[in-house]
Image (cartoon, rainbow, N blue to C red):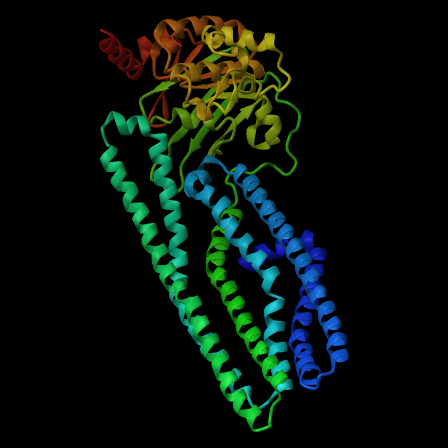
Length: 575
């Protein structure tokens, strides 16, 4: 998966990558030439007292150094830009793919995991790519070239390379074998910490209401401790890496100087050659260290790539048609024709054979006990889910045959949990109609019974709204969400228990003001409160996913036992 992601998302930058490879190649060759030039200066210049040769070779050495520095800087700059661009493209791909998910796929992964995969996991792969640009070309050339150049200086000390390199490689391999499982656990535990934090932040009111702060603190402490433990485990092993490399490097240096001194004393080696050999051995071991750093990143990046690939390889259960109907649905009717819906693996369907029609200009309400399938039913119209049996038609066309943009342009959904975006009142109201005028927005606010409190807010339409609308009350959020739907002026309104946070008087005023605004449009309302739907043209009663009654309020009172029970229970509560 890692190789596939790298190959797919680096394709636009192949020309730049080849330039990076060429620059790194030149810089590495220049780095390998420097010790040899330095050896010549010592043996043929300093030892013989040839100042001219020292100056000539010194100039060459300076030129080679400048070439190395220039190529390294250019390669690092281009590598960083390419790695950042790769990360940007991968994050964008994940975002757009997740945006196509239905509620089923989002629930499968969970919001905390999706956030981690699009941030931390992408960062791991991006860092690996950057380090690859910085080291992948350099390290093999440095190692192979270093061995060749060291042997060129003196074959008699070659056994030192034959000992030092395998020892270092075996030590690093042992460490990687130990830390790879830790890296795999680390990503999962980061997900867990994010999940717990999101739950605690989102449910802070519930936590405080039930005095569960100690329990939640303990739950977070446990998740945090688990992440800390695995991080410390990995850290302890990785902490021994650099001392180990330093030990091998220092012992190798001592051995080269010791045995090289003996060879110089025996006349088998020159001082310059010893200096060059020592430099090449250090370069070889440093190349090993760089390879180790790359290998350290590889396991974690591989785990992250698998997690990213899992998201990108997940096909949405709600797919747009290949050649969808692009014309707006118009003021057509909404038809539920023997609709059946089941969640994957469920033993019983949530909806079973539901049939009714919402005509243009008609208000149809759906009522039933908790778990009857009301919200699921409404979610089938904008294709948040797709039916598993039967069909939902809009304007005579199955909603699955519409181009998604054309379908959504015809609908305005006010969800059960009203959600507002960070920004202003105006930016939220214009969400469905970007060119809405101030007059249109004030009118929608007036109909939604929200004008008074918006006028009282500092800035009016430009008043700040926090993420999720947390700086306004639940009832105010619902009224702003209803006003947002009214600004859009769609052909179909879907109200999913959108009046639940309103008091009875505000609910009644809003419904009276809403009736003239929705003339000619199909209105589908899901409600728990009978008072909200008493004036509906048609009331559909659901029980266990089945339609057990249809008619007006008066008709259902006379014919539907389930509806009678709902009305009686609410009257008893009111009394």
